[in-house]
Image 1 (cartoon, helix red, strand yellow):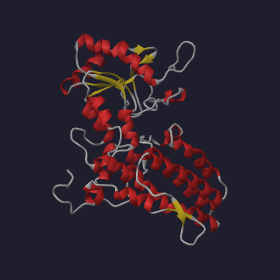
Image 2: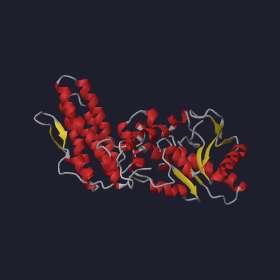
Image 3: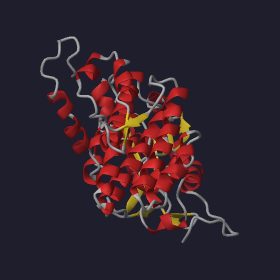
Image 4: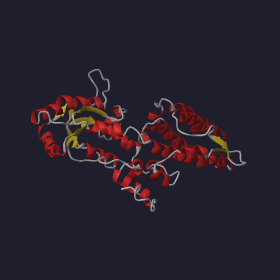
Amino acid sequence: MSACDAVGVHRSGLELAGDYYQEVVAELLAARWPGLPHAAARLGSGSDVLGLDDTVSQDHDFGLRLTLLVGRDYVEAVDEHLEETLPETYQGWPTRFATTWDARVRHKVQVTTAEDFCASRLGVRVDHPWDAIDWLAVTGQSVLEVTAGAVFADSLGEISDLRRRLRWYPTDVWCYVVAADWQRIGQELPFIGRTGSRGDDLGSAVLTGQLVRTAMHLGFLLQRRWPPYPKWVGTCFTTLPDASAAAPALTAAQAASTWPERQAALVEALVTLHELQLAVGLPTGPEVVESFFDRPFTGVRASVSQLLLAEINDPLLRRLPAGVGSVEQWVDNVDVLSVPQRRVALAQAWRSMLPNLDPETRPR
């Protein structure tokens, strides 16, 4: 079974979901509740939501998946109606099947409200304005699970409004997370040469990999694009209009066999990203790197992150430790980042760092 047409051309999961809604689900809804306000989309998890699925993607959790958003009073009734009335198959695909997170052989049209759907992905309720810590508690992937897929219909208007709200960080939060990446790069860049010069080539290479990863994350931030989960970071990085110019140097840093080559390639990439920072209008100094004391190693100028932090006016952010950043900048454990409740619970550690907030600025 494959999402291919008669001549064997792969059809994406988004195309399949769109047809499934238009030809089956929409008709069942209209027959039972004519004119019911709703939104239909393919959102949530899955490479197809990012538009990156291929035939390999079809070996698990792929198929007739849809997000159907209705008023709270209709959720249960619509879900039961679809379970009772959906056909057994559509275009050769079963309408009821098990997934890795739900062993029940049941339809996979997720019927919920727009608010509950977003909270299930983001971990943060969207029925109130967010403060800075709410923004720091979401990952790029969690936002993409709301904003990256296709919306096929939206007579409610709620999910479209929420997707617009999630386009990007507020400016102060943007400055804070960009500064965090620069600070981390500055802390470890000199170690590439220090370890390599002591004969620890493996350690130098490992550090290089970590720095390449942080530099790529920085590229997404400077480009105002939410970074996806690790499987697709490289693929999506190469599509960034400007930051992708750093990709050849980052690749060279990974492939280099000596620490001077690694350091030179990383510096080239950082210069490219620094130029992008200037181009997007974020504050920074004229130079990005400098010698690390009297050693033959390179470091990042402290002013690169300091000028970003000085631009921040949000009193909540100004009280947070510099360099901590968002949850995905200080945690890389999949079992934390991919579970909204764990991720947000961990992010509440920021609030414990703020014992002396004035009542007017104390977070909820």
